[in-house]
Length: 52
Image 1 (cartoon, rainbow, N blue to C red):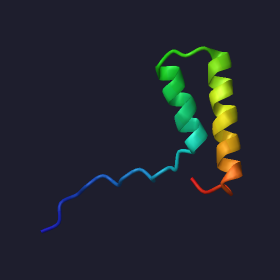
Image 2 (cartoon, helix red, strand yellow; image 1 turned 120 degrees about the vertical axis):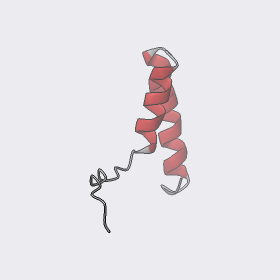
Image 3 (cartoon, rainbow, N blue to C red; image 1 turned 180 degrees about the horizontal axis):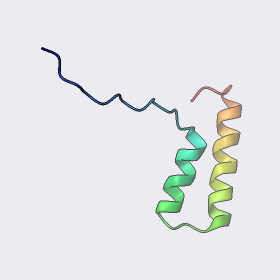
């Protein structure tokens, strides 16, 4: 006997920089701090060939 279940929502991939921004905002860091962190993480990712 099968039971009816609601379909699962599609999985969405959250980008690394979006996760970073969300965490920084959660911690109530200032906007210039957020911009600096995103800049350095983006540079790190690019330096390592977009493998993260």
